[in-house]
Every structure is written in structure tokens, then in C-alpha cells.
Amino acid sequence: MEYSISLFLSLLLASSFIYFLLRSRRRLRLPPGNLGLPFVGETLQLISAYKTENPEPFIDERVARFGTLFTTHIFGEPTVFSADPDTNRFILQNEGKLFESSYPGSISNLLGRHSLLLMRGNLHKRMHSLTMSFANSSIIRDHFLVDIDRLVRLNLESWTGMVFLMEEAKKITFELSVKQLMSFDPCEWTESLRKEYVLVIEGFFTIPFAIFSTTYRRAIQARTKVAEALSLVVRQRRTESEKGERKNDMLGALLEGDGGGGGFSDEEIVDFLLALLVAGYETTSTIMTLAVKFLTETPLALAQLKEEHDAIRARKGESEPLEWNDYKSMPFTQCVVNETLRIANIISGVFRRAMTDVNIKGYTIPKGWKVFASLRAVHLDHEHFKDARTFSPWRWQEQNNSGAAGSGNFFTPFGGGPRRCPGYELARVELSVFLHHLITRFSWVPAGEDKLVFFPTTRTQKRYPINVERRHVCKPCKQ
Ligand code: HEM
Image (tube, protein in one colour):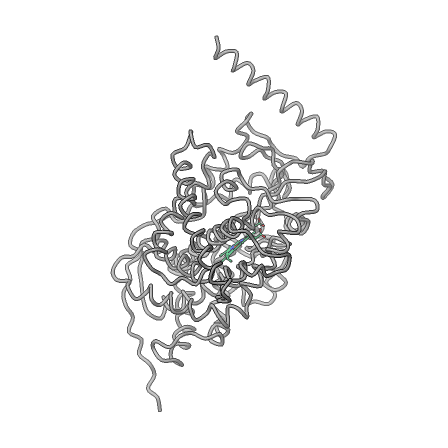
């Protein structure tokens, strides 16, 4: 009896909800689309597509039926999905005016309210520009490059036999982030911090209720441990900074209250660091792994890249560190980096919420609705990139390729507007240095089949195991 009443009430609620949507659609002229089943909408179709190597049909079918701006219902809410570069640009540029960022509850709880990803308004502006100034080209050139080179080499030195590339890349990018943010070299403390981080990140895509999800419960506990560990460091560094000792890292800038507007509390600094570590660690290690995967599957590109890096190494001693000029003389590497970012789409798109009714392309996005600006859909659209679904780094050498030259609108792996990724240059440098040392030191073959999947995050199912072998590069004899 109780069951029938609740079923009846659910159906009543669902049909009123759909009736309301259809009415408002007539009034507001929503983009065309399909809201799917009550409550779940089209979420299950989206998840099952993104759990395969080829999630494209989910978007392709809807674009073919409704156009590049369509309505769907995913993750519990009606959502306007954009596969259109102009609309994406409009959404990203109007951050804080017409749209605001909107993350699922699980991510917001785990990151903490003072993380850059969740900040809004003037504080966001100030902290975004502080982060940009911390990760700009001259800081990377003058301070970070030497550590990036050293830590990548140090990690590769221990590689023999079979390695899980995704695991190794994660270790490298975590060590780099901790160094850049807090000046710590790898040690037991950094490794135990990383293990807690892994648990925090696992909680990102779960139901944000501790009673329902063990993963989420574990993630919350790990978050507390990470925050405690970071608080200790912040307290210690604050004491040192009061004595006039300042380190040239992100924590130093935060303790000084750089960027104007006064200092920050310990809690604010901890949330901020915690989120920066997440943002830089997971993304860059995935792009490292996928670059190697795509190169392995495209031997011509790998051979051309090898030539470029062997030539750089031949000019230098075997263990001489890379310098900025070396980084700047890797044109084909930059094509590989672009192409990996384009085709892998680690961040497949960004969620926003409309702050008011927004009119675009003859439709209305109602106030409070979610929008998803799909970067992936544009990157993989044959209209914008010839043979868009093939890994072809050479496209970036062709000036006339509509995706390469003047690619601002079409190529946006780092987002755009006021929330554009502040780590875009750092990620490129880290990937380039990693590829240099990997390619000049090792040859490798995949140690078994592995599959790329895109849900809950972009990754390979088996952490991409490879068998590595040291290369003995013959240096040309000096005359
Ligand atoms: C391949 C590597 C990376 C990719 C593909 C990537 C991608 C992105 C994208 C698409 C956004 C925009 C999110 C939005 O608009 O809601 C973003 C934001 C962000 N990224 Fe990255 N990122 C990468 C590496 C890094 C690194 C190394 C850092 C470290 C400094 C970093 C720090 C951030 C931060 C703090 C934000 C939030 C910015 C804000 O909300 O104002 N990212 N990233």
C-alpha cells in the first residue's frame, strides 16, 4: 500500500515536472531536445556512452536531430547542451555576468569553499590573477623549469621492465605540484599525502552522502587528513614568514597576501592549495599518459618526435638539464601537445548555471538552468577539424588548417574567459619535458590491451602498462 502511494506520488511529481517544462518551453522557446525519463533523464545513456572508447554517438545523434544547441536532462537537472563554438565562447566569456560555474555537490564539498574553482566575484578575479602570475612563462622559465627537469629525470631513473604509466605520471605531477606550491622535494611525507589525495579524488564522482557511499565517506576522511597536513605546513611557514623568511612559491605569495586586498586566513590558504593540487595533478598526468598512448599507436609521429628530441640531446651532454631555449626549439612536440589536448579532451566540457534568462541563437536558456559547454564536441567536429577523430599532429603544422591557425574559437582545451585554466603553460612545459626524457632514454611497447574511457574521468582502464627498455643513443663524434 505504502509502495503504491509513493509510486503514485512520484509519477504525479514527474508528470507535473514535465508538464511545467513543456509549458515553459512553449513560453520561452527552449532549444529542441529530449528530456528522457522522469528523474534520470538521459543520464544513463550519457554514462554508458562515456564508459566506452567511443562516446561520440551520444552527441552526434542529438546534434543530427536537434542541432548544435539542444536540451537534455542529465545528472538530475534539465540542461542545455552546447556543441557550438560561438555559444561555448559566449558562455565562457559571460562568467559572472550571465552564467556562473556550477560543480556537483560531491566536488564542492571535497574541494572546500575557498578553492579557486568555487570562488565568485571580485575574490575570484583577484585569486585567478594571483594564480596566473604564479604560473606564467617567466616564472616557469626562471624558477620551475629546473625542478621540472630534475624531478622528471629522477623518476625515470628508477624505471625498469613493466611500468604502469598512469601511476608513474601521477607520481611525477604530484611531486611537481608540491614543489611548485610549497617547495617540498619528494619524501615520505609527500608520498603519504599523495595516497590521501587519491582517495579524495575518488570521491568526486560519487553521491555526496556519507550514509550511501563508502567511497564518499573515505574521501571526506582523507580530505580531513590532507587539510590537517597542509594546515601544519601553513602554520610553520607563517611563523617563518613573520621572521622575514620568504620562499619563492605559491604558499609564499599567499602568506604575503600578494595580488592586493590583504592577507588570507590559514583555512583559506589550505582550501586554495588543496584545490590547486587537484587541478594540476590529475589533468597533467592523464595528458602525459595519453600522449604516449597516441604516439605508440602512430609510429610515424613517434619517429618524428624522436628525431626532434635526439637532436636536442645531441647538442647537450647526456645529463645536462633542459633549458628554456631547448623547450622553445621543440616545434613538433608542440604539435603533439596540441593534438593530444584536442583529441583526449581531459576536461570534456564545463558546467555553468544561467543567472538570468539568456537569449542565444533564437532560443532562451531559462534562469537557473544548467548549461554544458562541450569542448569535446567542438574539438571532434569534422566541420572545424579535418578528419577530426584521428590523431594527426601534423595538422598543427598546416597554417590553413581551420583548427590550427586562428584556432581560438575552436581549440579550447583549457576553457576560456575569466575561468581560463591558469595552469595552461605549466601543463604544456611539463608534458614537453616529460616526453623529452622518456623518448631520449627509453623505447617501449604496450604490455597488453588497454582501453580509453571517459567516465567518471578520462583515463585508460588498466593504467596503461608498458614494457620499457633503455635506449643507447649514439652521439655523433665531435670533429
Ligand atoms: C592538461 C592539463 C590541464 C587541462 C586540460 C586543464 C583544463 C582546465 C579547464 C578546461 C579549466 C576551466 C574550468 C572551468 O571553466 O570551469 C581549468 C581550470 C583550472 N585549472 Fe586547469 N587544466 C590543466 C592543468 C592545470 C594545471 C597544471 C594547473 C595548476 C596550476 C591547473 C589549475 C587550474 C585551476 C586552479 C582552474 C580553476 C580556474 C578558475 O576557476 O578560475 N590546471 N583547467
